[in-house]
Image 1 (spheres, rainbow, N blue to C red):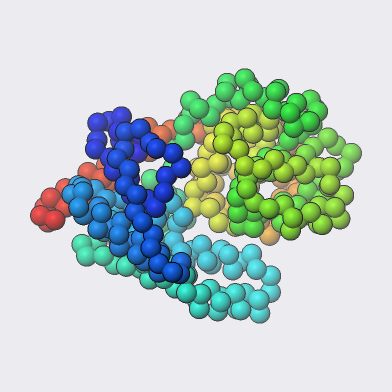
Image 2 (cartoon, rainbow, N blue to C red; image 1 turned 90 degrees about the horizontal axis):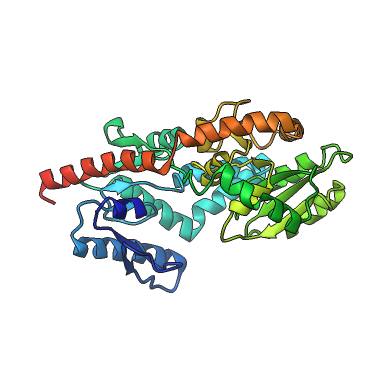
Length: 365
């Protein structure tokens, strides 16, 4: 939205709430009325579409589950794709079957599925933006989106805010505040949904690392560490894990870190991975992360086929205990991030917006 405002466009935001008043865009608060969450979801989708129609806009972009958009850019990917990955991290076929049945019967999930399908089947059909090839493949598989309406636009990163220079300015102070020794390798994870981002697998892998080497895992985010504390203790890692809680500004976290690790089960195109790359930090992640498509295994970091490969994850972390390797990968990481700045993302998004606006004008809508 900020880049659109800078370029002189009239921008309106429709949401149930805003964390802070934004300068530039016109904010529209859309009420979420209803006794149940499914009822609130569908009423919000309809109310947001109605408010957008009243505003008489050339382009309406849906990043979540709302109606009335002529451009879809679902930041969370597709619901079927996300659910499939959630099932993959569930142990045992019987448990997976039960979970699948529960998801299918869950009223809110059923409503979300209905809203999402309505979005893709709208008439006239919307332009659809996939933020990774993984998501694009899901859109083709689950919703038969034709290539002429399907556009691949990766997320962009603010390479000025997230930079090695910005990190260097606050690195020593942050490491001191976290109690990190100068020679201690810090692995960082930034996440809120610990289960989906591979927290259990990270704990299991860390337990296999050499305890005679100085290293620590720092976790930033609002997730609860309680489900993992017992396993951390059993793995003799109580002093190796540090839960720092959520941070408004994560630059100091990247600054303190030596490597970023995110063994995710599903991430359409992780912004935090792009931020870590921009800060010059090598990254360990999985091919279930759309951002991994921008990386080359062994260049900017290390890529895993699945979070379930605990030995492979432990091996990757063990490799990045090597400071020389981290420096080499960190330089490559920055180079990769510089090829995907916010400006490039803006230009590619604008091309889709212009196509959608032209189609609307041609239809007289």
